[in-house]
Every structure is written in structure tokens, then in C-alpha cells.
Amino acid sequence: MISVDEARAKILKDIRPVGTEVIALSHASGRVMANDAISRRTQPPSDMSAMDGFAVKAADIVTTPVDLKIIGEVPAGGGLNIEVKAGEAVRIFTGAPLPRGTDTIVIQEDTEFTEETVTIKEGSAKGTYVRPAGLDFREGDVGLSAPKILAPRDIGLLASMNIPWVTVRRKPRIALLSTGDELVRPGEPLGTNQIISSNSLLVASIIEAAGGEALDLGIAKDNAESLREKVQDAKSADMLITLGGASVGDHDLIQPVLGKEGLSVDFWRIAMRPGKPLIFGSFAEIPMLGMPGNPVSSMICSYLFLIPALDVLRGLPPRHPPRQKAVLGHDLKQNDRREDYMRAQIIGEENGLPLVQLFSKQDSSMLSPLSSADCLIVREPFAEALVKGAEVEMIPLTHPYPAV
Ligand SMILES: Nc1nc2c(c(=O)[nH]1)N[C@H]1C(S)=C(S)[C@@H](COP(=O)(O)OP(=O)(O)OC[C@H]3O[C@@H](n4cnc5c(N)ncnc54)[C@H](O)[C@@H]3O)O[C@H]1N2
Ligand code: MOO
Image 1: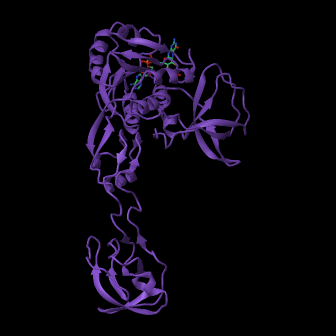
Image 2: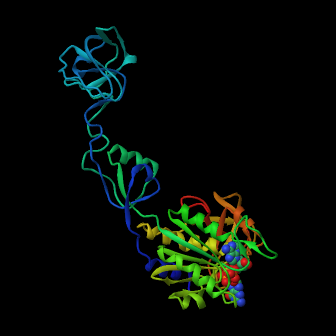
Image 3: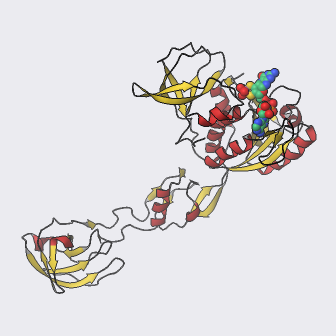
């Protein structure tokens, strides 16, 4: 058995970013921009007013009150081709360009005005409420550097830079193949002793949350023909994930059957719990993760290995699940040789840290405690027994890692 860190390094070493595509900016939120964004315009394009009021010369309003002659009006998007002279002012609105000769805005609340004349009641320093040309960015500026996951505010910036199309990484296509005679899809007729294939939807949801596209290849029966037939559709994907059949039982067919179909195994079995029988290799020249069938095992393997693999496929640096300190709400016995990822709830706070309580049952088949867990408590191999109040490492099951 290899360690979790070795497994992660081996998986990430073999994965390469997928290709790019050009898409409309309106569809680019959450996608990974693959080329730097260079601004196609200057913003603001000229000196602009930040307020509704009057454009004046600062030199005219050093002493107040003072009366100025109104010689015109300029709205946002408008323009006034005149030169403002001493003793003159222009009615102006937010977002409008400053007329030539003016350098300061007086907000209308600080004035009294008729059609012809404005009385400036309070002076303001030169440049007040003026947004100078290029305040935000200039044509030719690198607005955003690639690679970058485009957030809604980035979409706003690119739009303002007049970039209607962006080059992004394709969404990595991840084929998901469930295996097992006992499995049926949710909502389908259920035979005696059959269960629902929950893993494929669970893992597909993680893939979607982490920026990929899941291709559900369905459920292969526990026989060679069914597995061989169903796995063919994986060949158009960027990565294959099999669910179940990874262990040593007579019906665990992933290695014996796919081995004859070109599966080359890099490693099998990790010193971790749950997730021990994870297989990593390549199938039809695409990376393949053979996840254990127990639902919690496939979720934790996805969290530790699949999400970073998706990062690399998307051309991003791979993330580690975020870790933080927590305080144990009870004693905990020593650990064996497998690194343990234990489901727990946050029940309060102690010394400024979350106080955690592990679920009494840690069976890797159990989805109810997984669903109500707030975090995973990580225990190193051979960790010593701990008493209530001891510090432990925890992985919160929340953002910024995709919440699962
Ligand atoms: N003799 C040994 N037996 C087992 C070992 C071992 O080392 N020696 N490892 C155990 C561990 S740990 C795990 S984890 C499981 C993994 O087994 P497989 O990957 O072969 O998975 P299956 O046997 O196919 O299924 C295990 C369990 O999960 C259920 N399952 C499978 N697929 C799904 C699905 N898509 N949705 C929901 N549930 C699923 C399946 O019905 C089984 O109950 O092996 C241990 N055994
Ligand atoms: O290692 Mo298995 O994944 O515990 O149940």
C-alpha cells in the first residue's frame, strides 16, 4: 500500500490539461480562461464626472459664494464641443465627459441654479468628483492573467474591456461507469436485495461542481461482457472513473477484465480509510481512477484525488483540500496504519477553534452521517490515542473547495 501523498503525486504526474475552445463571454462564468485578457479600450475613455452637478474651473470657485454663467449641458454618453472660459459652468450628469476647460465638479446640492446662472455655495478642490481617463484600465493593459477561473466580477471586467469572446479550457469530460449486479438507477424497479447506484450521481455532482462534465456510462453487470461493452464509451472522455469492483472478491472485475482491454495499472491500494482499494492507471490512453464501491470511499477519493486531477485537466494548479485545526469533543483511540478520514460534526467552539464530535459509526457504506457531517477529521497512520480537548486536523466540507 502506498501513502495518500504518494498516490496524489502519481495521479497528478500523469494528467495533462485538456484543449481550449472559444466561447461567448455570456457563457464564461466559472470557466478557466486560457489566455491573458488584453483590454481593447480605455476606461473611462476621457475625464468623466462622478456626480450630477456642474463642471467648473477650480480657479473660479476659490472664493464662494460665486455666480457662474451656465453655457450648456452634457449628459452621460453626450459630448459638448465647446471651450469653457473663466466665469462659466456646464450642467453635467454622472458618467458624462468633462467639457474642455473644466477640471472640477461641484455637486448640485452645493449650488442654487436657474436656467442661466449657477451660484456655487461651497468650493471644492481641483479634480473633485472627476474620474480621469484610464482610471480603471487602459487599452493594451493585461486585465486578467491566465489561467483564471472566471468569477462573475471578472465577467464584468472583460465585458467592460470590450472582450465579447474568450478562450477557455474545454470542460474535462469524465466518464463514470458503475459496476455491480446489485445496482439500479434511482426510480427504476428494485429487485430483492438490490440497492440504488448512488455513487455515480454523487461523483457526477462533484465533477460538475469542480468544473468538469460527467458522462454517465450506466451500470455494468458483474460479468466480463457487460463491463467490456460499457467501457468502450469511455474512449471519447478525458478520464475514466469506475465505481466498485476495485477490491479482491470474485466479482471485483475491474482489474481482471479491463487488464485484458488495455488497462495499465500504476498503483492499487492506498494506506487510507476509507478508499483503500483505489486503482490508478490508464485505459485507452486516458487516465483511469478505479474507485471503491462504498459511497463514502468514492466521495473521499473524489475529494482527495479527483478534484485536484480536474484542476490539472483544467490547466490550473492542483488544490489540496483545505485543512484547519479543531478541538476534539471526546477521547479518540489510536490509529492503525491507514490514514483515516473520519466523518464529524462541529458542535461548538473551544479556544477559538471548532469543537468536533465524530460519528460513532464510521462505516464507509453510510450516507446519512456523511450527509450531515460538517468536516472530516484526518488522522495520520499510527497516530497516538487522544484525549478530549486535544487538537486535531480537519477538512471542512465547504467552500472554497467545492462543497460536497
Ligand atoms: N477481503 C477483502 N474484502 C474487502 C477489502 C479487502 O481489502 N479485502 N476491502 C474492503 C474495502 S476497504 C472496500 S472500500 C470495498 C471496496 O470494494 P469494491 O471496490 O470492490 O466495491 P464493491 O464490492 O463493488 O462494492 C462495495 C460496496 O459498495 C456498494 N456499491 C458499489 N457500487 C455502488 C454504487 N454505484 N452506488 C452505491 N453503492 C455501491 C456495493 O453494493 C457494496 O456494498 O471492499 C471491501 N472488501
Ligand atoms: O477502505 Mo474501504 O474504502 O473503507 O470501505
